[in-house]
Image (cartoon, rainbow, N blue to C red; front, side):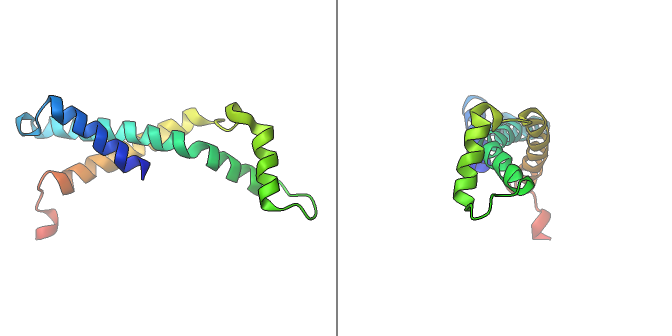
Length: 119
């Protein structure tokens, strides 16, 4: 959900300054790519701690009788805030670029009035 909210807000901010009707198709694609990149960064930042925790809980065995909640609390204490963002650089690159291209396609198919689905 964060991706779509951020994408819409960034694109809306650009279009408030530079009206869409005055932009070429190439410039609109650039706005879609840029907005998608920012949205991807936001999604990566929001989801990184949970993904790090999930990775850790899947890699380590719990003590006998230890519940999932207590394991998550223990892992969170061990990682701390800084540790929960381990690997964020690679994740920003991966999720940011992937999301940018997804929104470029989204912008072309759904927002530009393309007749792709009306054939």
